[in-house]
Image (cartoon, rainbow, N blue to C red; front, side):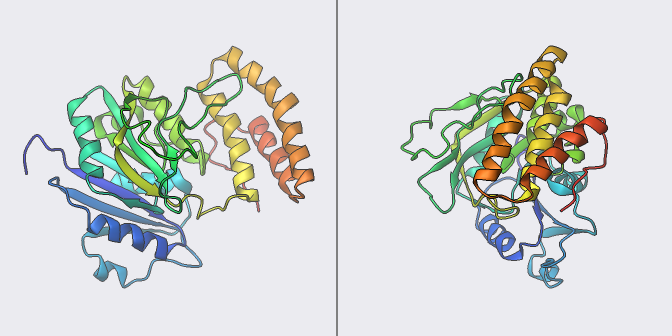
Length: 308
């Protein structure tokens, strides 16, 4: 292997989705690169559909790790990261599919720009392959905990293809991180469990002195939300809980004060009215539980507070 070409560990996490995960492994198997690849698959406490025992023989190049407990997005990825040997680590959702040159373009970006700690590719929706999901993120407004995903739902006409540079946040579905940056910033915070953990990680990497980039010359397809669904009590709880937690962990005190007022006066009433209008039973309870968790737990509490 060329000494200038860093070796790469691909890490992905499965939870009760062997069919979806196999499609990812097949797309990786057909992916051509001159770099040394290591593929780590974490079966993250699957219960209804664990990965078959036969997979260890079917995919001998894959390091398969079975976790007895579902440790969430961050925890599952951290299990894989701890076993990874690569100088670059490419974390991908199991519901993604690779395209040609994906790995090389992202790795070349890190090779050429040592100040970059993490880089994400262009992301399109798998079921609408001409439609963008991600072309970078706008900066976070820490008074409202709002930002937006650039390009989302737009037809991809190449309008963002010149974007190769800094963005506010990487996308959790596909992010390649430099080991050196990760070692300085630490692993993802596992008490997020689902949602916002990659945004928090980007903040940690930025505080460690690195930039977050997007390279729109690289492309991956994302099936999105096959794990938790478009709307669910699980999603509603963690989206609200973790939005507050993210601000608690990353905003200045004056920003936190304004956010708490905004969330109490605008966000919570608006959400409750939406739940009533759309007849989403139990969602109000999950919202109130999300708020209560942040009132009763410190930012590093390992108790996620989730109850179906």
